[in-house]
Amino acid sequence: MALPWYRVHTVVLNDPGRLIAVHLMHTALVAGWAGSMALYELAVFDPSDPVLNPMWRQGMFVMPFMTRLGITDSWGGWSITGESISNPGIWSFEGVALSHIVLSGMCFLAAIWHWVYWDLELFRDPRTGEPALDLPKIFGIHLFLSGLLCFGFGAFHVTGLFGPGIWVSDAFGITGKVQPVAPAWGADGFNPFNPGGIASHHIAAGIFGIFAGIFHLTVLLPNDYIAPYEWEILRLYYPVVFFFAAFVTSGTMWYGAAATPIELFGPTRYQWDSGYFQQEIERQVETSISEGVSESQAWARIPDKLAFYDYIGNNPAKGGLFRAGPMNKGDGIAEAWLGHPIFRDKEGRELTVRRMPAFFETFPVILVDKDGIIRADIPFRRAESKYSIEQVGVTVDFYGGKLNGQTFKDAPSVKKFARKAQLGEVFEFDRTSLESDGVFRSSPRGWYTYGHANFALLFFFGHLWHGGRTIFRDVFTGIGAEVTEQVEFGVFQKLGDRTTKKQGAV
Image 1: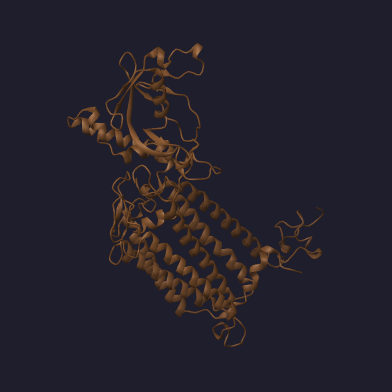
Image 2 (image 1 turned 90 degrees about the horizontal axis):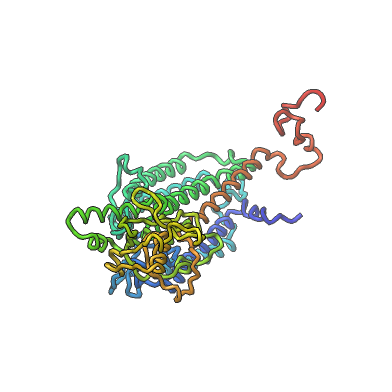
């Protein structure tokens, strides 16, 4: 009988040479995808405005990962920070992409070689002459090499001792740049927003891996302990590593961490939910006013970058799984911050537009005063309205941005800006260049989280599947007539355990 599709990989279990070949081919495919995707993104990326049109607005997926590791320049003469570059060196965006494609080709050739020359002396048990793998020794080699790589990354690349460092920014994603990071060895190293923890954890984990690898290379278990069914046990525990890592990386991406800076991946949804940027903007304005500057000058000091974060269209939770394309395909390419609108009624009360919660597509336009009392709205039924913009006599003044100092008193303009203020700070967008449809898209942060959460669940279910096969390995080849009683409900107190057969009629 032919092997079912989900069993075909068993052909390499006792074929060490071809086991290496399929792993090499997998690495070739991954590296080739990474390099090709990087070149595609570079071909479509617009570096002209890093503030209002950053990489995460353009849907770049692999570029943020290159940037956080220290790659900021292009052979095209531009930098991710908006500067012009004359000598980017070999490790530019294009250099990294091409190196991955070269690595992919070499792995491809190595996979073919190992597939053809599969029967090497190295893969035979000297005692029996049969094909065999010394799994404890292989485990030790992998552990040692991965520990060495982990330690080298933390001790040299991240710290800048022999490398560029990593992308580090402030709490509000304004001053980010690539710089060396000193390890944090205290309790603060466990703060996920402390970049020093990245260096210290890689150094510590690397040292542990090196010593663990040496241990498994020197204290070897004889292969006599490797029974045939232990392949199933290996398949049981391997997915644990992957689903744990996938769940962790999904969490750090969605909730935010030093390893996923908002300048590269966009804000998190919780920063909109908690009014994180709104509170910081208000704090900066109040500080400026306390220094004696006017309200208009105080708002003019707010960086466009900070104002842009405080806009619901940059919330990764506003996208949808079936809305393909970058954020710019939704609301358009941001061109300018129009300024901060402050609404006032005819009695001079300052009004604020109630902001839209993350999971609403539409929301009533409500203007409240400082005490939270509704003073104006855009009514659904104008015949019954009491608080309409026209009745209350609402006007809007702009502070900072493109419309700084301008006042609008006509109802259509006030309504237009009130609707925009629901979405946070007010911006002007170009919706014609990309034929943007006005439906919000998610950022790379949202797509990465969704993808890796799915990977995690897939590996988790794989773990349960192989766990079941391990527990019932004496019958996992199929259910025949001889085991029907064993698995019949109610025959045994514990399903499948012949020693717990119930007495009497069932």
